[in-house]
Amino acid sequence: MAYRLLSGAVNGIWLGAAVLAVAGLTVAGLTVVAVSARSAHPALPRLARLTGFALTAALVLDAASGAALYGWSVGLWEAARTWPPMLVGALASGAGFLWIGRAARSWLLATRRRPAEPA
Image (tube, rainbow, N blue to C red; front, side):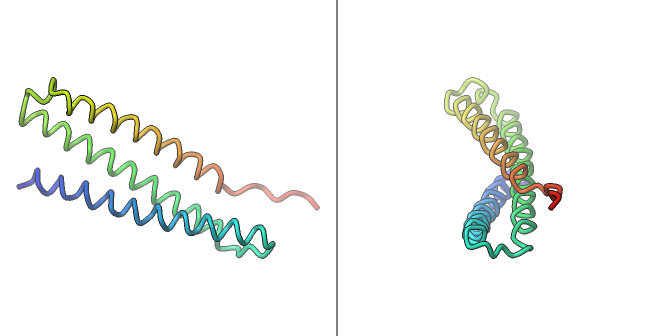
């Protein structure tokens, strides 16, 4: 019962991350349009940073729940340690999390507050 609950939670977390990603793309698009029109709304950078923090939190939450689910699966079925789909899945998930983590870092660095330049 708890295993199925954790499995469902992983799906829900990824769905939330997908919704946040669409929101992030929308905010990024609005920011680019506003900057090119020289009418950037002051709330857009804050909204972009908030979206980046939410996406990073979703990544951390999903990495933790995914690792717990993987570990639980291996605990339930010892042969999973040597079953090729589980090994490939672990490698692909690890690479994916590193890639998404790098993207989240870039997002947060790009939206950080810069000191005002003297006039």
